[in-house]
Length: 193
Length: 379
Image 1 (cartoon, rainbow over the protein chains, first blue to last red):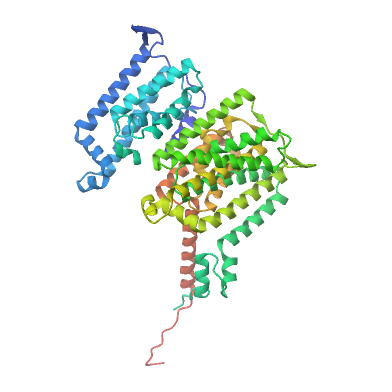
Image 2 (cartoon, chains in turn purple, yellow; image 1 turned 135 degrees about the horizontal axis):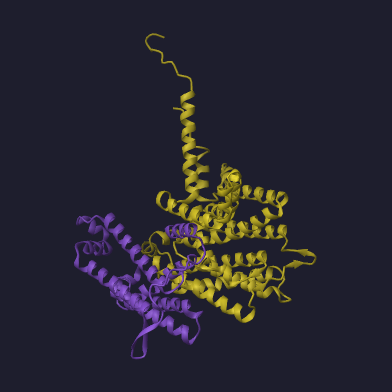
């Protein structure tokens, strides 16, 4: 959290609190229509990046030695040390990847809207409902959770009112915590964290 | 050997360690020397100094510090002592503040009434948070309280939107002709409340409840095996700390006069949590030091920018970006403390104190006259 505050302060100081207008990379227009749903180029870009990131992360975690070590550390740090895994390096790497994907998420979000540096961290916090819904130790679950939360938010925005969007995400979070703490795909022992 | 024998008789030592010992010669000494008494004395001196010598602005800042102090001490209660993560203090303050604002307009909303009702409502909210909170610890509990912070904030937004768009104005409390919202009376109210909270907490933290919470914080399973009723003590911590925070919210409402949901955002919650951590978790002075630091830091930056008045570009930049620089400093301080000294500024102070004492001892030894060793055989 300290790092978050520091980075946010740094960004504000360097670029100023004014809203920066970025050149429009993709058009907002709805170009492609599939049945009842319309997609614009921006949406396609976002989806493409999402799928790519998930593919890379899933592949990395399950098919590479580095990923194996990361899962080992997550599962049982002490045992991992005994097996010769450098926990410090592995954890740092995990953090770095988290930062990288977060930055990517920020970029994708930005392409669709105007950036307002003061309030973006609220967007980051919205990841938690998605993670919990999907299950804390399931990457695929996070993807599904994210999609569901996004859909729920959009639906609420349309039918009830835009202000309810964020609350609904947290409402889902509470519901998940109370009813099924391990989420949809998480393993039960995660629940008693 | 030049090391002096332990201070006071063994009876005094025991009395100090165990709290109020009974009827021994050294007992009085223990009482007057105890941290509580010294702390209370220092507190009274500080309060009187500000009350009679302070400018309007000082009084205002002092009230703010006291109000935040109440919240941070309660946060330390629930997090530093009982080990339960709670990210929602601002939301609970909001409950107190909105209640007070709403009730102050009623005829029967004479001064202590809204405060007391806020206290009770806070307790109720604490219960509501505590019941699901019983199940979780660590990250999950943090997320639950985060969710509640947003939900309560949103509920406040809706309530305000429906009833009064621009926010609720608090009718200034008064007793007859005495306007209680004036700087001096309000300051007095806030410090009296803070004093009561501090006294109460130092009492219970030092006794059985404090030990129970300490055990729960360190290892829940072991604590329950030892016979500590987890449900009872966790709920007690939630209810108590929330009630206190709501009361602080009530005082806050009286101070700022205008209650809006935007004030009680996640930002405020995080700031309050940071205050506790920077000052020192697990102590009673720590959170207050944190509150003092956070409230006075913008002043500090002003002072620094005045120092640079010879270099207008620097001082101008500092003044313009004051808020952001302050935030940056908190973030930096938080990081440094996380890495080097988890105990916060209180622990840093203790380390420096010990270093000074050690340095002092060395100096004394070095300056003592060399003692000539006489050869026993040839005097």
